[in-house]
Image 1: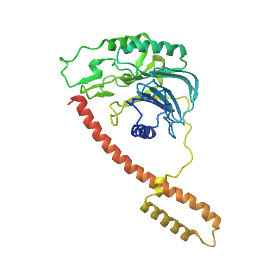
Image 2 (image 1 turned 90 degrees about the vertical axis):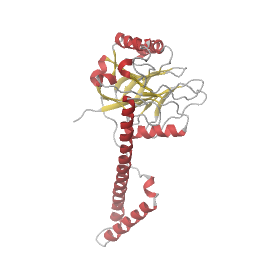
Image 3 (image 1 turned 90 degrees about the horizontal axis):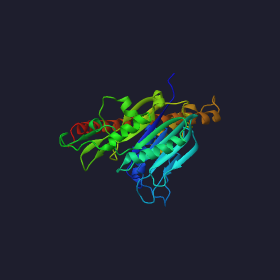
Amino acid sequence: MSKPQFQIYSLNVRGLNTPYKRHALFRDLHKSQPAIVCLQETNFCKRRPPFLKSRMYTDAYHSTAQTKSKGVSILFHRDWTFVCSAQYVDPLGRLVILVGTLNELPITIANLYLPNDNPISYLRKAYGRVRKMSSGTLFLCGDFNCTPDPEVDTQTSQPRSQARSPPSSSKQLREFMHSFELYDTWRICHPDTCDYTFFSHVHSSYSRIDLCLVHSSALSRLLEATIGIITWFDHAPLTLTFEAAFPPRGMRNWRLNDSLIVNRDDVTNTIQLLQEYFTANMTEDVATSSVWLAHKAVLRGHFIQKGAQRKRRFNAQTTALLRRITVLESQNKTSPA
């Protein structure tokens, strides 16, 4: 029997004030269904509290600025019960710290959006607050705006000889991680791989600035780390899989997909199925009440089958498109143009 697992999804969304971007975000989240979602640069304004929830992500915590800039959010999937015992929300919109339990697993989750100027100075201050509140397994996620090792975590169209010298922030980040026994989860899983989470259109360069750091004591729970592809934004999502203490709450009651009774052909097929069912089963040997009750199960099976067929077609088209994007993106990462 496989061990229960949960996923952490971290992404810089570059603003969520437009309905399209919120729709695109939840479309991706509903497909992968991670337990914890860490979002950076939501750009919500403090004067208008954000509404960033869906039927699957009903629990959300936000840090917003006075203007439409910065902002971080943490969302929890409804099947993973998060009980918050302590929290800190940065008034500048750069940090959210949550302490509690996730399906009875004690955790501390911190979501960061570090500034471009002197990011490690802010990181040290933020981590000092995290250490005072921390309880259980610590997850430090976010956009760090610097890379641990520029030699392997950046790719530019310029020759290396013409590139700028490595920034001091990278060295400071490595020293910070070493001093507090924090580990870069993606690099732990991919020690010899070069991949990136951010593409700069201005500089035509890639970099891996989106990280999730964990303490050495949590490495035994780490199962997998993946970087997705860049689609509707200029950052790629970072997805981490960890061992959980208890599984999610499981499946809920079946609900009809309304789109299956809108198309004329679908409606015609459903009517034909019902006519054939009642013609074959309305006999003197079978009670009318039994026929009526049984038809609900037949109809539900019909809709489940139609929904599965439609989902397979849609997933096949999506997979083909993502495969093409992945190939082109890999080519551009190797040689940006």
